[in-house]
Image (cartoon, rainbow, N blue to C red):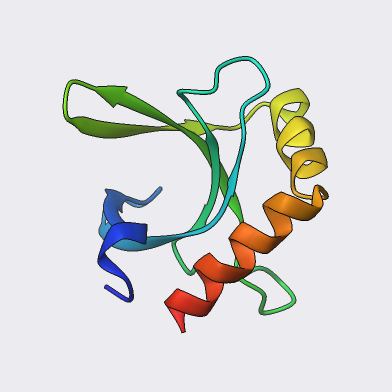
Length: 99
């Protein structure tokens, strides 16, 4: 794990356990208690860039559960949220901690 608070394990599409890192956090306009996250499992695309994955953090008692998001309308909301200056600043701090 690169940064314990921003890393987690999940099964990839092949059923293998992989370490993922959160690369961005975006406020959820519909629910402040369930922010959106952008994360990667370090899968590479055709351009050798890491594939971004999207999810929502849901708190259940004292734990958080990540619900992966795959629908384009919600992903577009997340991408729009990434353009906000405050979000960009927070995400720069997150990425600095990953390095």
